[in-house]
Image (cartoon, rainbow, N blue to C red; front, top):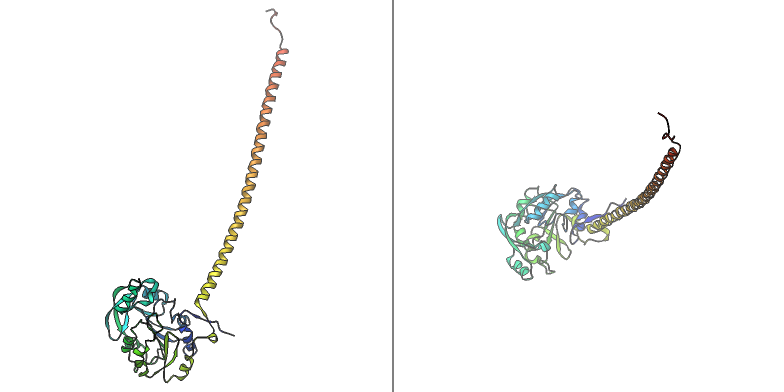
Length: 315
């Protein structure tokens, strides 16, 4: 029996590629650095729905609260990740471009020149090593990094020789660009004993060199053989079902309205018949009153005609 299709929520089908790990790691663990929205465009949500659990790291207050509310089985940390602990100034992107939040003042100024207003705020700063240290070495299956230009700092704060996650998925292009950025930080990954198995146009997938079978699984992009559907298709199907239900409800209301209108017409007709009957009764009563009056007059005449004349009687 064919299993139900995997539902993809990620923007570039990264989760479809990672779903190939479900057989080997049905209860996988992950660390999502720069998690963003808990569902829309989220790389790990599809795996979360299949039983994976992990740590979401997100510096934006609104997104962090949504993650806590909508992913209750995960842990969410509101912070940025860098080379050392401390604090950092971030530039919050407007809602329509939320994923562009950055630590680069230069990049924020560039967006500002395009008419987008970025707001500076301070965020706690933690390291990836501190997160990996919360797990047994090698027990984290996926680390996803999407930090808008801070990839080098994140990797510089991770001892990948000691903490050995299976897979690293790292955004490898300049923000909103096809220009690669991997040359700035890839040596930190390769020197730690990882190999790049896939570049999907946006991210590079790295697998521990000793995990040959996993490397094979993650060597090709998402494709028709992965048995997947986009979450948008399910949303559309649900919207169509809701629209169908609404149509049935409207049809039922129209039928009820027609019934009420028919009942109203019947009531009006009945009221008119009652009014006509009342008018007939009133006319009949008037005729009866006239007839009774004439009878009374006739009776009075007859009584007068038969009354004895006592005017000549003797006393």
